[in-house]
Amino acid sequence: MSQLTVVLSQAPGKHPAKRGLEEALAAALLFEPNVHLSIVPNVYDLGPDHTGRIFLEGVKGNMVILSWHYPRAVFWLLDRIGIKGHSGPVLLKPADQEEEEADESEKPAEPKGIGAAGEIPDRYIYCLDLRDRPTHEPYLEEIRRIVAECQARDEQKHRQRALQNAPLIQLGLPAAKPAAPLAASPFTLAEPSSAAPSLMEAFTPEKLLAPTNRRWYPVIDYSRCTNCLECLDFCLFGVYGVDEYDRLFVETQDNCKKGCPACSRVCPEQAIMFPEYKSPAIAGAPVGAVGAFKIDLSKLFGGDDKDALTQAIEERDRELVADGRGAVGATVGIPKRQAHKPAAPKDDLDKLMDDLDALEL
Ligand code: SF4
Ligand code: SF4
Image (cartoon, rainbow, N blue to C red):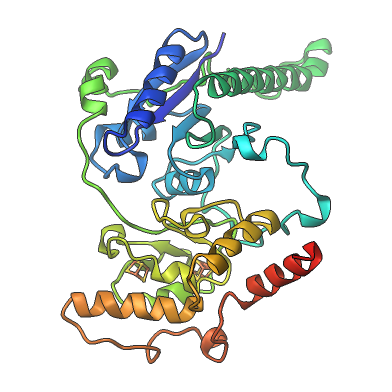
């Protein structure tokens, strides 16, 4: 029977309610058949040398990540560090959306981004948001569903391989290619070299949970990013670069200015996320008609009456001055597309007003 790797990413700090949920979930998952549980510090804070990150990089099979962030943000932050896979469908919804029936007309348009770079391994990564439910039971139920889904998928692959080879075998011919055996368990870690310490030694709970420093950097959703490079022009702190395929990427994560989300406001595709920012739109909430409606309501009634571009310019100037450099205002790196369009989120606001009209508020 195959096992599923479940990784619990702890909340930073010691918030008692969050710790309580983590502990209840960990206690339940430890006794759950077909699940291998590991606990790491806040996944967003893991630096390249942290044991928790090395562990994550070593997991080769299907994986569930439980964290205190929006799933979109976690999926793409893992992708950025080479932990790739297909996005596993999650059926658990936030409690307040449980009863909402999706209106077909409000479904977001398919994203038109450039997609993940490189080869995507044949495995699924399921990201669950621990803010969705206050108790552990719904998560346990969803993880059991995911275990069954992964097992069904594996069985289907076995059947397909057997079918591919069957006609040749019936004719007495050797199979075209010996079928590569599926891993007995999707929890497959990279083989350690003989000189390497055993996995048990390398990934003790103490090492996995070694303290981290808080970090702050943008995460790109490549399902939305069109590679327009407007963020590259806008950021004056050397955070962004392009890779060998001329694709935008977050080259120097830790150059980003703590707490500042300026470039996310100039991205025309809502592809730049700061997973720990207070506003859901910037933190990686699902993009779409329903989500956008909620997000824009908070914009309208939250007292934030500036347009996004003006706000981004102010935030960038503040960081330049804090760095001992001069403010540049709108003279540098302002996307041509937006130069004559002062209200950047105008489309969204127009949509909001349409929605309000429709509701006859
Ligand atoms: S501005 Fe947005 S869409 Fe354009 S390259 Fe940057 S992340 Fe991608
Ligand atoms: S938030 Fe500021 S410093 Fe960080 S990447 Fe964006 S523009 Fe650059």
